[in-house]
Figure 1 (cartoon, one colour):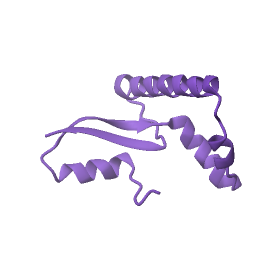
Figure 2: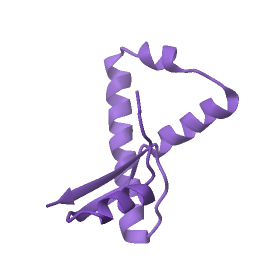
Figure 3: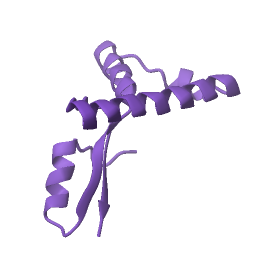
Figure 4: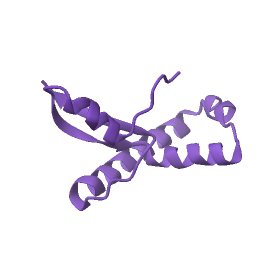
Length: 95
């Protein structure tokens, strides 16, 4: 399970107290965030559905979709200044 959840601002605050240099940061899984919000609002539990997906074609489609989604939102963030929150925030640092 998760012990802590951070948004990008909170992660930047944690890193600012160190000597690490931020190389890249942003969000991933924007669509998954919408699905998660739907689950919370309507109290819907899809874990049984998602755990039962064993079809290799569905898994391949979802993998390609997530990669495409990440590329689109990364482009929007860095080239257009549009930073859309996702289910996961990340920061890549260098010593």
